[in-house]
Length: 251
Image (cartoon, rainbow, N blue to C red; front, top):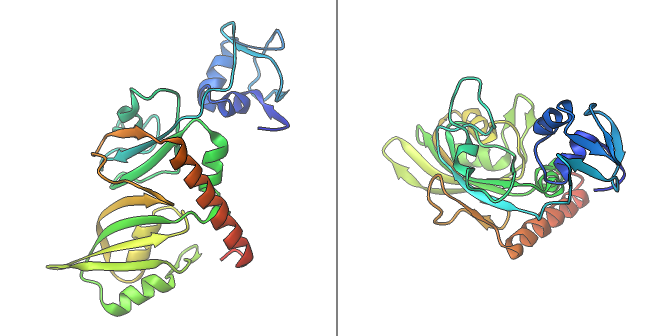
């Protein structure tokens, strides 16, 4: 964290709470900066300012990075206006306030990261980082070899062509093709749209890997904290992919 930031963003960057909760605390006049009550969430402060919440001096929270096996049927948001279950209901015992790194849609399961380190989250979700994400897919009807080649080449979507990706066919079962797809982008519902672009429909979708991190045997709805070695490996993979992407002209 460097330079100046608005007080709500500063509190979020320190891993204290979300920006939404920070605004609530500020509006309630529970936040002081250098001894003075702050009631404007847009006030800019220096990174070395003395900030207190409810009289307690804010210290940077220890970094926490969690991996959740997201089940189908919950949304990646803290509150849902339609009353649907959210991923945060599975994190009630988490050791700190954390926020999702990216998102998985309602009908997609698998590996989802959470952290209180906004710099790490920004690195992993930055389009320039090109962190690979591997999905296990069931598509219907069966995909032909030509459709698989189209997927690997990167089909064109409404917002432009996708990057080439890795496609590994696992087999056919009745009218369904099972495959793994590794992409280096993070567009909205990208895998589903890619499958639709070649003339099929996703029946089941699960993210099983992000960079070097694999979901493994983690049970649905369960989470675990990453160890330092895993976090460093994620950071290294993101930085290496960013450098490689720069050399390739952003491809």
